[in-house]
Length: 186
Ligand SMILES: [Zn+2]
View (cartoon, rainbow, N blue to C red):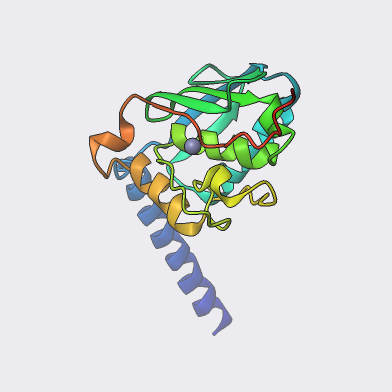
């Protein structure tokens, strides 16, 4: 009995191995995930924030991977004054500018993940809802949520799967996401 079972097991393993062999020989066409290399050499105090934001997006999405300093699809800059903003040159490519003055008022991580969201194809959605990332500064300085909603995350995943319109992948500048709430001096 034992030997019959053993022979059966050997036969099953052989069958499984043969099946695996066929699979390896004829792989289904894989949809390659896009690697977005981001560069923090000019991110100043916000290089670590950029890494945190990249992890958040990587954990929330599929079909794309943000990877540090392997190239320059996305450049992160620290600026002072003028407001934080994003310049998308195409889906997954562009520049993000973090204004130190705004980052002193709003959560720097929320600003960073929001601006990167524009690079990943998301528009602004100024509805004051803190559970959304793309509501930006409309949710107020007390909103520190740095996570995309499931709808925002799945939209990005779908965009990188090649769906949705060309508008989402177009070259566009996204400004004024973060209203200046500093009291004017003098
Ligand atoms: Zn924005």
